[in-house]
Amino acid sequence: MPDTYLPGGARPRAAHPTPATGRTARATTAVGRATRKAAAGGLALAALAALAAGATLAAGPAAARPQTAAPAAAPGCSAAYTIEQKLSTGTTWRMCWHYDGRAGLVLENVSYRPKGEAKPIKVLNSARLGQIHVPYDDGRHEYYDLTGETFGQDLQPLTPGECPGGTIKTVRVPDGDPRPRDVKGLCTTTRSRGHAYRMHDYATEKVHQQQGRDLLVYTVNQVGWYEYITEWRFQDDGTVTMNVGATGSLSWGDYNARDGRGWPIGKGAKDYATSHSHNVFWRLDFGLDGSSRTKVERYDSTVSAPARRQEGPTARTTRTKVAKEFADDHKAYRWWRVVSATGKNKDGHARSYELVPGPTTRYPGRGFTRHDVYVTQYDPCELFASRNLTCAAGHPKSVEKWVGGQTLTHPVVWMNVGFHHIARDEDQQPMPVHWQGFSIAPRDVTAMNPLTPKDLAWQNGHWEWRS
Image 1: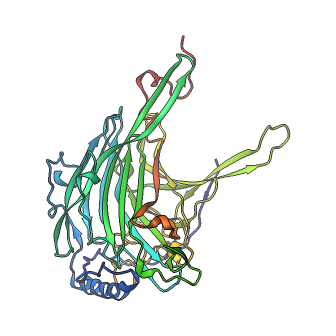
Image 2 (image 1 turned 135 degrees about the horizontal axis):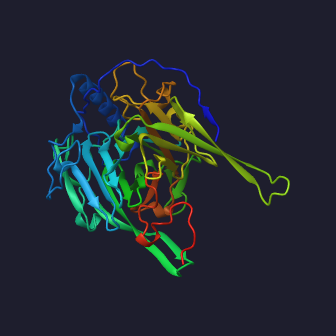
């Protein structure tokens, strides 16, 4: 396939450490989001003051109190901050975790070991939420739930019924109320996802089927009326799915949208719930095979009408090696992958992970929400896609301004998934969970399906019928 290169200029960057940040105020949650505007503003001022003072919002391994016996330590963390799960289908996932006072749960050193692999395969250096941006359709209110509201501080305790068959870990919330506080708020459990595969073998008339199994890791954080379920799903085939589910309550303080920007709630046409958007960002720092020097490629296919005696249209796929920072959008026949710089599978193919966007409604109202994917050169202070408060003064505060054309030697992927919430009668009371998210899927990480049964393991590449 022919290779091309995306152009780009350079942006100046100063070297800055990641300053510790903090807050000294907590917004009121017993009223509607609109009435908390002033509180949120004071919270942001308090955060900036704490930033200058050097307070911290990050809860490291020394802070939390695990409730159960911990597994052996993963690289880079103690046993208490290791999540390790061998799924019944044979794949083992392993990672470190800590809790950040703004982003909430942060996962690090994520690896998995499928059946047949001699050692774990590292996938991610870190994975975390990058922002939840909530603008209202009437233009009167706009919220940044991670860096302008109380997302991190309001971690919710979970009951055993919310973590069926799993373990609830205790998390030290670094700036709670009272602060700090311990919350039994991190669930790790496993769950069936149905068929992983099904195959009728015509040679033997045998049906091969496997029910897939996932490791789920999740927390619940409250912001005003909303409760966000932040879910990380690790499949036994190596796929990772990141989801945020919004639930809780509609804000009755905002039942005032009679200007055509809302939807009638309740009897008649008296109360109109204000429509709004949820623009969720994730920040992924890949470390495939233990190296941050990953490469990024984009693939596009064009479909041409049938020519000559062809039975149908033809499709031609081209690869673009992306050498510099970029912003891009999901479209038909376009996809991206992050490629290992060091590792290959047993077939000699470079290991990679494909970005798989989920359904989205792209919000055009802000520069940082106008694209589905951003890839930036790693900078330790660039942690939030918008209203980023962790860089030195003068540094741009949103992701679209970080895409300045630097050469990618350590790429960081930012995924933006939007949802336009036009309320309905069924949203009360309580509000059903509406999910938004995306996946990363292994591409050539293993030579075959890691769940392949033994009697099919010989069918790799060209094969012939066996008698």
